[in-house]
Each structure stands twice: as structure tokens, then as C-alpha cells.
Amino acid sequence: MMMIKYSERRTFLHGLNPLSKLSVVVAYCIIIFLFDSLAFELASLAIILLVAYAIRARPVLSLAMSKFTVTLVLWLVVMQAIFTPTGSVILTIPLHFFSISVTGIGLMKGFLMALRFLTIILISGLFVVTTDPARLVYSMMKAGIPYRYGFMLIIMMRFMPVFELEMSTVSNAQKMRGLDVDSGGVKQLIKSIRYTFLPLIVSALSKVDVLVVSMEGRAFGYKRTRTFIKKDEYSLIDKAIIVFSVAILVIIFVDSIAGWYPLPHLGA
Image (cartoon, rainbow, N blue to C red; front, top):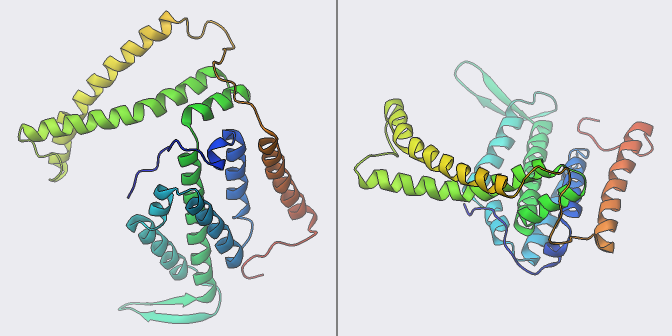
């Protein structure tokens, strides 16, 4: 499965403000759980796939067709179909001590759950592929999040690939010394952790020490606010997207309370 990470390109989605894209992702993920409609879920998933294809987001398309995703989708459908007793029985599976009844509502719930899972995973992947992590954190800081917390997010995102590379280096070094770190039982696993994670922790602590000295040299945390080199302004399209996302959520929330247009639900 291809790793999902930011890809710097010139597309419409890449040019949008990260917070406007985040508002769409949040609204999208909330709305798909409010409609128990296969047509709506399929349309939502199709829109994401079309957008991913239009901007050539190959990691997102590869994720949708990966073995892990397909297996998990099938597992969700089977589990919901087996453990949902309500509805008309369309199939009975006889076992040694008992039988399993598969109902129509169970299958419907399974497909809905699988489509929701795919939608959330793919739209999140599309957000990651088209959003610079540093730009996202800077936008969050400008929106009101204290820069100390934003700096923690930046450091986490910056150090994750570094630690991944360090982990690969340490693992390869141990293999060159004849240590098998990929197989064995619990005892072998503990041994692998001992000889792999300890060098990684030492390397991480050394990098953290250098970072702390650098932060102190720049008087990090001296003031409550900070300055920014780059100005990431909101365009008219960004503002319209944020207003539209919030408005859709408010309308659906008020409609669910007032009952103007009842949302479709299974078994209703």
C-alpha cells in the first residue's frame, strides 16, 4: 500500500487554505453519518474518487484499491450482516451448534458502514495529499491556537519521517550483525525491541537535546504571540467554502430538531 503523504503540486485543492479544506472534511464526515441511504453514500464516494482522479492523487486511488482496504470493507459487511438480527431473513448459514441468519437490513447496514469507512479514509487521504502540514499548522495558529501547541504538531510531523528512517537504519544494522528482528515468538520480540528501540531512543534524545538548545537560543516562548514570515490569507473562495460548510451543518442540525424534512433511516 502506498504511503499517504503531502505531494507538492499546482492544483485547485493545493491552492486552497488548509482550514477551508478542513471545514469541508469535517462537514463531509458528519453528513455521511446522518443519511442512511446507499445512493447518497455511493454518490459521496464517487465524488471523492472523481476529484482524486482529476488531480491525479495516485496514493488516494491506490489506497482505495489496496488489499487492506478491500479486506476491511468485506469484514465490515460480513460482521454487520451476521450480527444484525432485525429484518427479513434472506440467507441462513447452518453450523454445528447453531445457525446464522443474514437479513436484508443487516446487509444494508454492512454496505452503509463500508461506504462510510471508505469515504472517511479517502477524503482524509485527499486532504493529506493536498495540504502542506506546516501551512496547516500556521493557519491554525493564526486562527487562535497557541503557537506552542502548533509547534508541537510541527515537530511531530517533522520528526516522524526522521524516526522512520532511523528505525530502518537501526534494523538494517542489527540484521547485518546477524540479529533476526522480523520473526520469532514473544521472547524474540522482546529481544528485538531491546536491540532496536534502545538505539532509536538514544538517537531521538540526542536530536531532542539539539532542538531544545536551538529553541532556547531563539527565546522560544518568551512572548504570547509570534510573527510569521509567510502570510496565508483567505481568498474569496476559501471564505465561501467555510461559510457553505458551516451553513450546511447548521441547516441539517436545525432540520433534525424541527423535523422539517425527516432524514432517511433504516427500518423507518
